[in-house]
Length: 241
Ligand SMILES: [Fe+2]
Ligand SMILES: [Fe+2]
Image (cartoon, rainbow, N blue to C red; front, side, top):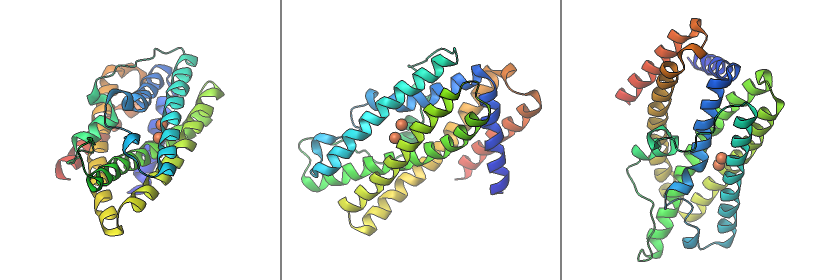
């Protein structure tokens, strides 16, 4: 089963990269995910972080995500495609994952130190699980860009983003284990893993369906029905999850 899914994802990213209009739309999906922290008030609660080392890593994380915004914009422009910065939140992976997340990590001044630590851990777990999925997606995307993108800049930009995402994945999980005892950290991570898995099925099923409908002519006609089946299969898996 893994081999089939792996092959399908590989082909999907190749088909996307082969068509500049489709590729531009997918890079805009990644771009809006990078910009999402600017549209909400509860990402990166650095003012409530006690450890200076963790605060410094989170500041670097914000700077990296801002750099990613610039890299995606430059890549989209290089392809001659429009930059779309205001996609509805239902098209943004972060927002869809939150829809399946049963906890809030918003920190207020009147929260005590334990609540602040727990909520900070929830934010870091959300970021960790989300970035892990984005990195898996970018792995496939980078391979397709290296083989087929019309400008080498695109693979360079995607590769630079991916290297940072691996660093974010590593420090966020370390920080959760520094903040909480092991059993609590594992229980907390499970909440966000489940939310991310459901969010991913929902996001992937709907965005694939949308792109198949709106960019019908941009897909190889021999693959269209297979991708429609993939979208339906993800929707069915979500139903039974
Ligand atoms: Fe990023
Ligand atoms: Fe990241």
